[in-house]
Length: 265
Image (cartoon, rainbow, N blue to C red; front, top):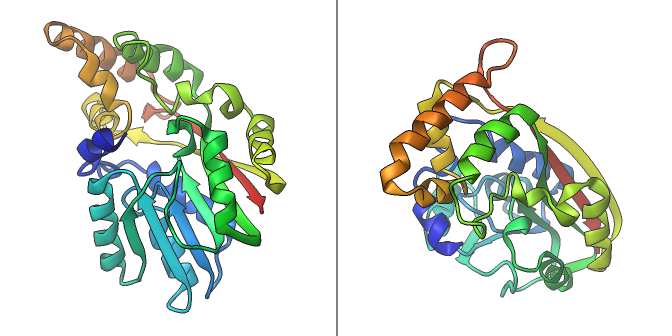
């Protein structure tokens, strides 16, 4: 994951598509950070959730972000500086966060399904929270069926079985339903578990724009797995599938359900 996201760091959330940032900010809104609180962002990426967290807790509070990718950490620090706010950002493992608590809230946006043992990770985060502190995670729900069965299916067809796509394959097990995610957090020892759902609707100028987006997120692994001698053929097939997935207004894209699971320690 560190190597993958180091490769993604430059283009991640930077290709003109509203996707990562609105999901992260929606999670922050649900956690309702307040001035003076201490907040931890696990898997902070380039700071999509960390920046609004830092702004919300203000100079009287504390914001800390950790990410396994040094490249992402560098860019999160730059984002914090550009925003004119304050946060500590360090390289860290979401499975074993080595940070000093306690925190009033922990946020983790689009991270949990990448981890080898999500339950163990959630259990490791709980001692970092104050009694009654909040935890919130964002994960993916269903997306437009036509896109899933054409574009994503075609892209996945060329990758080894062990290569997973969090946005689509990340919907198995507890990630497949509100109830599954709520039970996962209860099993990790949290209470007052609730679910909030929303939908993000990324749209692309043309198939080339979609490819830039796809290469800027975890799907990059699928492109890299295509045999070089078949790359042009596969790309052409994918572009046809993408072009066929237009909405009622003729725009290319998909609607992605997003699940926020919120709980307390």
